[in-house]
Length: 304
Ligand code: GLU
Image (tube, rainbow, N blue to C red; front, side, top):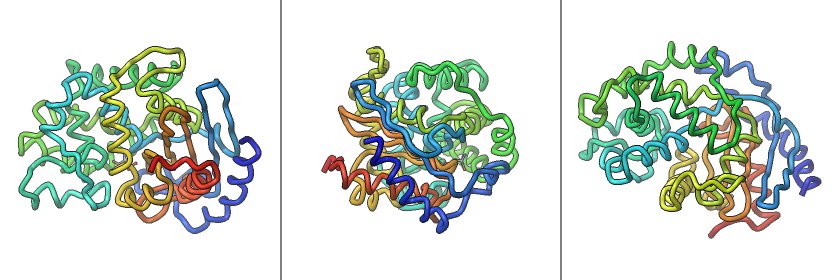
């Protein structure tokens, strides 16, 4: 396995030239375009790594699965999905247009920004600080990593430039999807996106879901039902508007973020974390997708 990963990283570094590092949030553009790394964890405690697996980057959209788990724990499935749908939108992650044009007012799913901001508003806590700390503590528990924290430079950049996200927040408030304070929801959302991780952290998150919500030390933190919901939404909506194609090409639940991370879940078996900040047009790590595709073919990982 170790050898295979080194081979796949080497092979796919070439393709990183074809993508572009995200630059719409200040600081993200500092990432090294040809960085590429992977970490895989299994249930026997093995850890396989290659390339830039230790490099820190911000989790961005991958955080949407973390807050979704906590929001369902806090409010129950019925409430959460009364406010956010379960359907792929077919639009870019930051699109606002369907909020107005579709007859159903709720955002299409929790993986697009509008849905994730609505989900962030459901996290319990007296103010934004307490709500976000609960998200961070939950993420620490899931990954068994107490060192996780926010990259405050990126957070400030997110918050200062996040006008479209802000517009979506107020739109959602207007339509009754957000019931609480909009600015609190946005602060939680910008902060959750700015949590710093590496490919190992993502592999821990992936293994947690692969084991239906159980940590490596055996603590059941979410129900199997919640884990199933999250994994299913990762397949249908996790890779922006390329999710269908990724389901065909890779065939495992995945979620990507514009920081260059992808988390992959091989149910019952593996947690996979990938890092490669060079992105395709949809916002997915271009090298990351190719590594996952090769890996899936090589190890026959597709769940279909
Ligand atoms: N913070 C980012 C945004 O809302 C997350 C984007 C992403 O990773 O898809 O624009």
